[in-house]
Image (cartoon, rainbow over all chains, first blue to last red; front, side):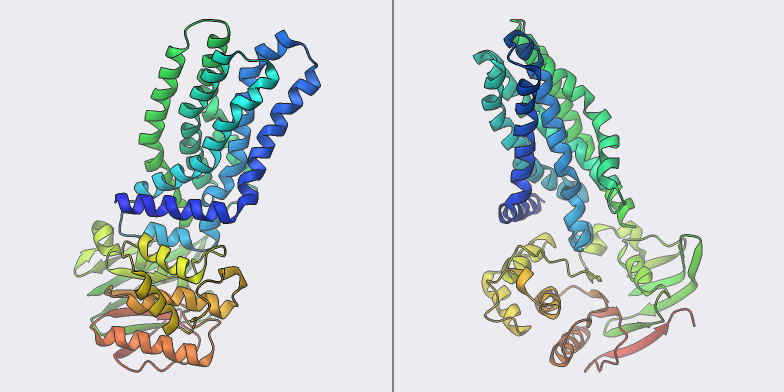
Amino acid sequence: MLSLFFAIVGRDLKLALRRQADLVSALFFFIIVVSLFPLGVGPEMDMLRKMAPGILWVAALLATMLTLPRLFGDDYRDGTLEQLVLAPQPLPVTVLGKMAAHWLTSGLPLTLLAPVLGLQFDLSAEGLMVLTLALLVGTPSLSAIGAIGAALTLGLRGGGVLVSLLVLPLYIPVLIFGAGAVDAAVSGLGFEAHLSLLGALLAGSLFFAPWATAAALKISLE
Amino acid sequence: MLEASQLECVRGDRRLFAGVSFRLEGGELLNLQGKNGAGKTSLLRMLVGLAQPVAGEIAWRGVAIRKLAEDYRAELCYMGHHNAIKEELTPLENLLASARLAGEPLSDEQALEALYAVGLGGREELQAKYLSQGQKRRVALARLIHERRALWVLDEPFVALDVAAVDMVAGLIGAHLQRGGLAVMTTHQAVNIPAGAVREYRLGA
C-alpha cells in the first residue's frame, strides 16, 4: 500500500517536472496578485502591514484553485484514472498520493515564496516566520479539500468555475485561522492557538478528504 | 468463472440492453458484437466494476464482484478506449509506471523486453507525444506481454494497429487463453485468435 502511495507521488512529480509551465504559471499568478496590491493601494506602510496576511492568504487560495482542475483532469482524459480506480489497492490511498504530489507542486512552492513576497508589505521577522508556518500547515488542507471539489467536477463543462464555487466556501476556515495567525503575530499576540486550529483542520481534512474524494471519483467515472 | 445474469443498462433515459446473461470459463474468449451505441463499452465497464448495472448481477468464481472488490480487481486487467499513457513520459517510463500502479511492478529488463516484443525497440527513450497513434496503442498493449491475471477485458484492442500488430495481439490473447485465462473483448475487425474457444455474443440483436 505504501509502495503504491510512493509510486503515485513519484509519477506525478516526474510529470510535473516535464510540464513545468503548469507549475510555474500558478506561482507567477501568486506573485503577481500579491504584488498588485502594494501598487494599487499605495505606499502606506501601516495599511499594507494590516492587509498583508489577508492578501497573501487569499492569493494562496486562488493560486491553489487554479491548479485544481489538473489534479485529476489529465488522468481522467487519458484513461489513467480508470486504471488507478481498478488497481487492487484501496482508492483512498491512491487519492492521498495524488494530494501529496499536488501539495508538493503547489502548496510547498507557495509557502517557500510567501516570506519573500511578505517583505513588500513590511511584515516583521516574526510575522514572516508565522506566515510561513501557517502556510506550511494550512496549504496541505487546501490540497486535500480541493481534491474533493476537483473529483466532483470531473468531466463537466465549465468545471473550473464550478470547482471554485464548491471549494472556496470550504476554504474559509483555513483562511480565517491562517490569516488570523499572522495577524496575531504582527500585533504581538499569541499565535499558537491559530496554528493549533490549522493543525486540527489539517488532521481532519487528511482523514476525511481521501474517502470523500474516492467516492466522488467513482461517481464521476460512472 | 465469470457469470453475468440478467444485466440491464440505462444511459440517460434510454435503455441500452436488458437481460444480458452469459457464462465464461477458463480458456474462453467472449467476443462482444453489436453496432455503434449498442452498449458494448458500457457492458465492459460493468464487467470490471466501473459502472453499476441497473439490474442483474456479475459473479466471479461464484461470488458477486461487488463483494469481492479488491480481490476481483487483483485478477483483472482492463484496457479501455484510452491508452492510459502519459504524453510526457517515455514508453519505458509509461510501462514501468502503469505496472507499478497496477500493483505488479516490472523490472527494467522485463519492460524493455515487452517494448521490443511490441515493436517499439529503439523508441523506449522517446517521449510518447512523438509517437503515432498506433505506436501509442502498442505502448498500452505492451502491458499484456507480462500480464498473468486471469481475466482480460479489452475494449477495441486492435484500433489503430497495423496488420502485423493485430496478429501479435491476437497471439497474446491466444497464449493467455491457453494458460487457462479468460478474456472479454469488443472489436469490429475479423480477427483470428490462434488458440482457445471463441464465443460470440451479439448485443441489441
